[in-house]
Length: 253
View 1 (cartoon, rainbow, N blue to C red):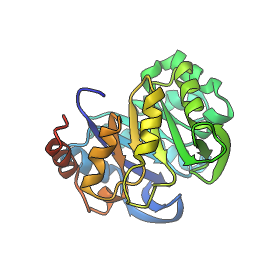
View 2 (tube, rainbow, N blue to C red):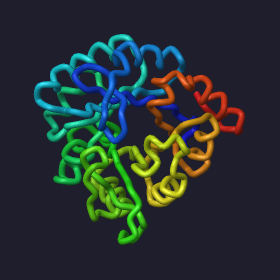
View 3 (cartoon, helix red, strand yellow):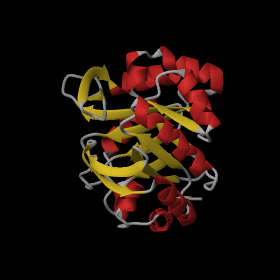
């Protein structure tokens, strides 16, 4: 585990606005991404993650504008994912102020993308985003999904994570599709399984609904915790989450 646990708010962005929904369905407006990122920065967020949930050509320029405007006033690492298919996409996002780039569906379709990003920009830039669901047929009991969890593959999650790290992924963002949106807590079994093969930092995502949910994810081996709706709905603040982690004896920034 890293020296200090990171707390990361995630903002799903479509057409320049933060949206909320379940599995990217029934999306509703949740505010301005630049304003929200600034608020979370003031609250003590360690990083900000933007996910471009529509990632169409029409929306792409809007996302670049959002990243640039955020980077000008939020001085913590920005990770941007969604629709990244080439190293040119990565280069342009980095030029607009992103620090790390998340890849998911495009890397599953063409794993060499991970090698290309790591070779050109360094492993620290490449974050593999894993949307994972349980499967009785997979050797590990978990498979990866694509398209925001809507399409299930037969690719074993642990095998894919291992391949991606070997190719140069510098961090794993592990989102439990089964827990996502339930607010019943992180899937600690999944976290432990991924951490068991991980040689890079692991970010736990999916299921956060209460202060007591965060410490078990770290105890399971995660280096960072990521959440969205509990922050957007003002149910919890970054400071409250860090306070709960400190109360459990965990080091936070």
